[in-house]
Length: 458
Image 1 (tube, helix red, strand yellow):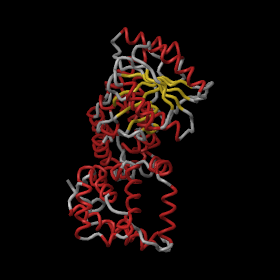
Image 2: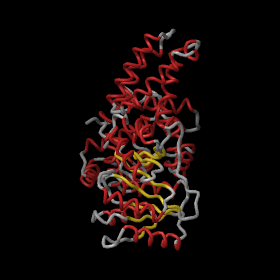
Image 3: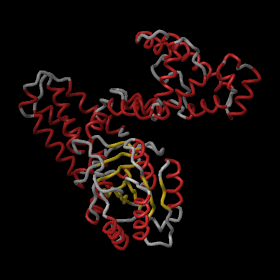
Image 4: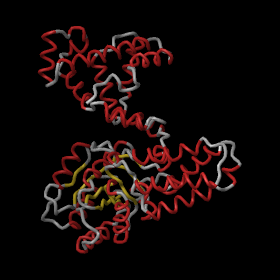
């Protein structure tokens, strides 16, 4: 996420953070590079100008010149200004109203509104323990209603069926009555994609908004459109009273122009980031954490929250008890570990949030065959329960049967068994506790060249 911006900014700031003394000249030089980095990241020009000016004014002031480590003080100023540009603090949803609270989604075609409805419904259900109903008022795209029904089933929320013959206002009013009967806390309304220049469609969504009076009107926009995302959000904001923005496809955006421009141009806060295709891939937007990641300092708070929410605590506790008693770490345990890592966005997703590991995450993404983790799981699923508990049984004919059943090669299976054995050794060292033992085990597992060296490359 935002790799090219992180690289450019880190390179620009590296030259100044080690300086014992800051002068107007070296601040000027660094800010010129920062300005270029932001423009290349497709950040809107007015935002860049304001950001550079604010940093300059604060950097030349007393707080940096008298600091014991002026370089570090300068970096803190850049971080604080990045946060200010993006909105200083996380702004959640305002659902303080008589249930059901209506959330309306608006945006262009193809921005990912329907998927975002399902992601948000899941987040509200699992994190906030809300009862959620979803409805589609998109009567123009034939598959839209069916798509939302499928996604609602997947995330386990109530779906109100609609029909393309109905008027959007009639659909949402009926859905509202249904949500009241069901005692739903939240009703999320998916609307048709439309262009800000399409007057008839904009009039329709304005009418829909007036009829249902949503407490939140979120504009869903593709982050990869850069500063155009901010301009489109502003155009929609002039027609609709938007309360916030959801940036989608952020995981594929290497530049970061939208995240840095939206707040300044629209005056509306970014409330969520779509960071993948799965229905769990929606993160509340924290400007301070994102600023930290952009400057290569990681995001430990989000990583901790992710562990809290996505790691199966029961399985983790069961494995801990098993290891403590000195029982064998088998292939079923190994499969559980692969699934847990996958739930947290895989190895690259985890590395990206660790301080100073952003480049390592990129290397992992480029060099590790990410599909290998899925293949490992398929291979373990192709084994009998007895083989999973006793991997030493897997020889000759059994290997052929497992690889044929999983559509893999014998060398893939050999690699899996070798990595399981390394993990098993590490678990043995952890028997009886002790962080030193665990770290030694990790060290033994890490091949030459650091993390990922032992995994298959493309």
